[in-house]
Image 1 (cartoon, rainbow, N blue to C red):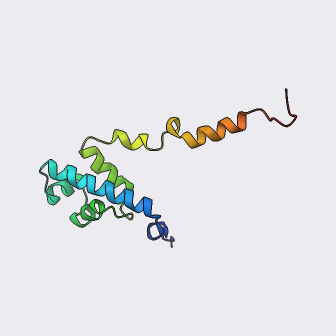
Image 2: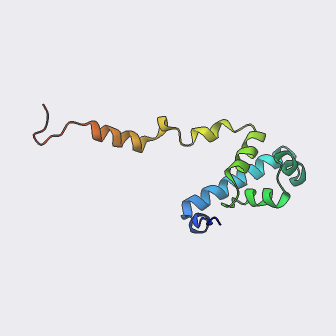
Image 3: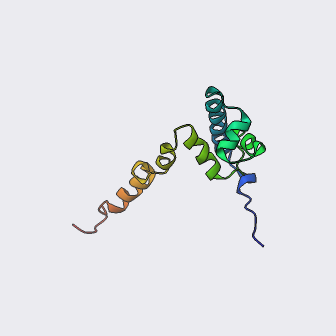
Length: 108
């Protein structure tokens, strides 16, 4: 028997807010394209209740469903850019700190 993750019920406020905004943006995109819940859900191959949950930013909805919605509105390319290592400034700064020569008497 697999354990269920508690991550969805313990989301930090910024994470919950971002998922909500993503859901709202996807809802707006669907409506601007004059897609009904039924037609968009069918194209996404999900149920209408699942589509509604996604549009509310529900964290229990699979990332694959969010990805399918992004693909249908022509925005899938941005998904892979979210965690692109090239744009990870924190990791870059940490790497640079590790490469800096030690000031207190080490290698010269």
